[in-house]
Structures are given as C-alpha cells and as structure tokens.
Length: 170
Image (tube, rainbow, N blue to C red; front, side):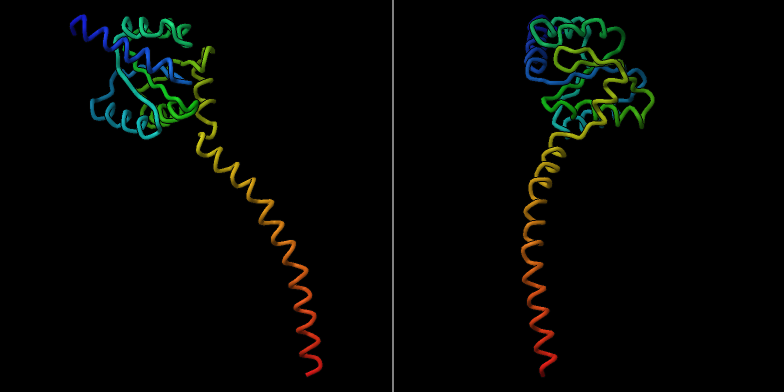
C-alpha cells in the first residue's frame, strides 16, 4: 500500500469514526474470507461498517475523534465495526461472535466511554433504534384504540338493550 492510499484510508476511517456513535473491536484470527464477507454483509445490513485494517493506520485515524481513547485495544489481528446507530454494529458483531467462536470481541467505545466485552454485549442486548420507534408508535397508538373501544362500548350496550326490547315486544 503506497503512501497516498494510506492517507486515503486514514481519512476515510477518520470520517467514519467522527460520524459513528459506537465502535466495536474484535480479533478475527482464523476466520475465512467467506466468513468475513458474511460478517461484513450482516453489519452493512444493520446500517454499520466492518473493516479489517492495520492497527497503526487505525490508531492514526482515531486522532481527533471521540474514540481516540481506544488506541490500546489495537493489538494483534483486529477488525473494527462502527455505526451511527448506537446498537447496530454491536448487535451484528455480537450475534456473529455467538455463532462463530473464531471472532473474539475485545471491546469498543460508545462516544467517549470505553466498553469492555461485557459492555459491548450489554449494548448489543438493547433494542435497535427502529425497534424503539416501533414500540413508541405502539404506545402512542394504544390509548387511541382503547379510547375508541370505550366510546363504542356504551353505544353497543344501548343497541343491544333496544334490540332486546324489540325482540321482547315482537
């Protein structure tokens, strides 16, 4: 990789880190190309990015971002996943790591906070932004449906009473 390509990669990573809310770091030693491709596809499907990079370049890219405190995690064959959704990258990588023991979570960062493995797993267990939105819409819609049911109940009772009197007199 020539110097211009390295600068381009550092710049791209720096932009990714600057816009991300979560970064997850993992060791990928022993994974096949097909498995890494599958993991990339899963992370991308969740709205994140997964990259295998050189540690020195990644450490340079971390400068000037909220994740600059994570430099000590980059030792050995590391890969990074990051996303703008606080949960997406952690969830995708954690789910893959559960199914494949060759991917080992090392830690990560959430804003300016370091996360250990338990922290990444706890973050992955949270519902995603889309799930939270769906729950919120459900909570907002629930009172309206209950209100309609309550309003309709007395009218239905009156109609049944009138129908019973009509059948009784007939």
